[in-house]
Length: 511
Ligand SMILES: Cc1cc2nc3c(=O)[nH]c(=O)nc-3n(C[C@H](O)[C@H](O)[C@H](O)COP(=O)(O)OP(=O)(O)OC[C@H]3O[C@@H](n4cnc5c(N)ncnc54)[C@H](O)[C@@H]3O)c2cc1C
Image (cartoon, rainbow, N blue to C red; front, side, top):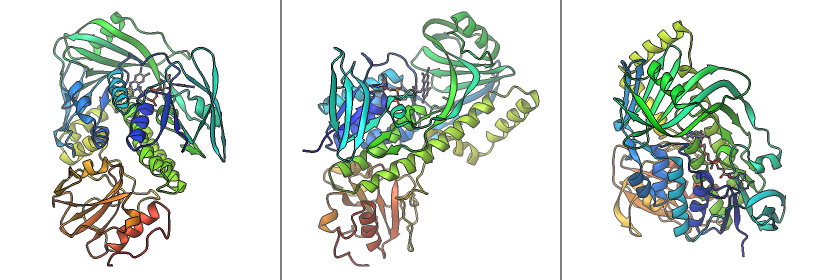
């Protein structure tokens, strides 16, 4: 019998990985040293791409039902004069909103989903150390009663946060730095005129104040306090936050009944390699960055989706372990991009120089007038523009398809005929298989050796998927390759190469 995958950490990333692996039939064990789930709101936004991935897992609905859809971002001057409004109604996804949901709720829903898959989080259970050898992992795990267990695992995933034990044990450098500026955070009831269905960011001469709706009346307020003493400041008082809001926010807001008051500094750090032999790093264990753009948790959850389908194929012996190398190549590149974008957004928000602030004001004003630039901002925030064009798994060749390019996100599309009960492309991906999507050409006949990893389906032609082409879509809804109807053998060759079992397939269909 195959040994389970050990997941260290039951934050949003560990829970996502456990759920996605278990859904694909992988035996998992998930431990967390904390006695209980967080009760803090921490990461507040689920972006469209993360919701699409939860949909592929068959569980987006409870998240959407529990959250508050925010329709856009308002950028204003102090006092409330509008500078730039960006609407998410143009998001290239069925999820045309930012879903506001406290992290405590996201974790609760993920844990409930995991429970339905018969997996229980083992709490007050701490990974102390591990050994990685040819035969697998042996992890040393400490229980609440002090008992230390030696647990054999096939693979270990360090989803254990910014201070990751797994990363420390690997000796992997967490390269980057900590900003000397302090930020204040308050989850409070807010009375007065501020959007309850959008994000509001106020740019004032002495810093920003941002308002994120949590529910009808409660909001997250975040403000920067500029460069300060070497030691991090203590949590602010409600009065301090109110004073900043009076100075920078829309006029007349009253804050009351704080649930959480905190301060933080921005860390921008990342490991170079997300895989070391049988050990993976994901989420905050691999990358931490500015909360600007709200991408931290989303990026971590998408690390987990990326790893899960690959690890499941390898665990079931349907693909060679070399497939796992692409996890680090793909996700480290995304990590670099997120770090860069979040860093840029933070620097723009924190500008203190009056000349630069005036340039910023003019730039925002002009950005609002150019639809293509606004769309770029929506694509970036909703994360539908993330791609793996430079991945070793992305294959280009002659006779390429129009529509989504190799490496790009594969949007959902209705199927011409239901396939095993699925009516949409993303539903087909729930099986954990690749989809071979034909549009306007007959479905591809797959050799028997590939039928346990890929399903042929026929889609309805659309602006996303023009007629006359075939796309090989990965289980995480990215295009591995595409071809015109005249080069179908490319699809089988690509599949064979992706799972790295050359010679597994004999008799390619008509070229
Ligand atoms: C104040 C604050 C505000 C934030 N705001 C935002 C935001 O607006 N948007 C955003 O995207 N992100 C935000 N974040 C970041 C977001 O919370 C993280 O990106 C997210 O929690 C990362 O999830 P994770 O699962 O990787 O790690 P974590 O949530 O840190 O979970 C790691 C888990 O591992 C467990 N663990 C650690 N070591 C061990 C061990 N040795 N053995 C067993 N278990 C272990 C811990 O107990 C913990 O439960 C915020 C964070 C903070 C602190």
